[in-house]
Image (cartoon, rainbow, N blue to C red; front, side, top):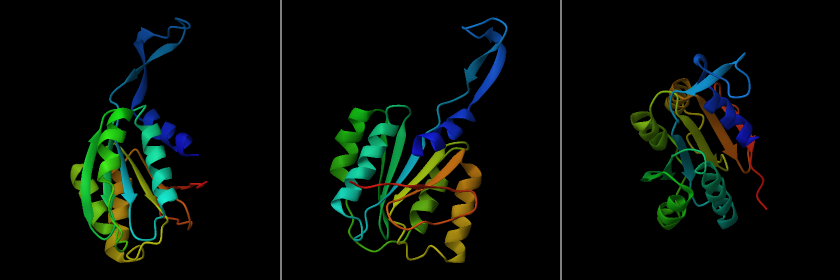
Length: 176
């Protein structure tokens, strides 16, 4: 489900062009990629996140980094780090050692950080158990809406609660 949601986001940066015909048949247009979007991974490291959940989040980020650059925002009640990784090796080297948290769960600061740094048509994924204290506050809802409208695709990836927000796709993440 997560990979399918990414394909939608990646597909919005590709267009058909007759300047370079398809390699399979000259009767069809070729494809041109305008840009590779950055995937913004907002990783909840609050006290309610188990080691298994954190491990699953990191595994998903590692998988994503095989296709495109990722920027990881580590947060609980505050934003700790914004970590950029251009490859899977950098995910292991940079992100693993900088995962920290253990406090409450307030997402608004991480949404604000994402809005300031992301480019239009980037992809945003929130990894959480969705036990977020400020989820139903008006200002937080507005930030969610702003991020979704700027992103090519916005995904809520939850290990526990199902949350429906306008403009966001929900994906249930199974933890082994």
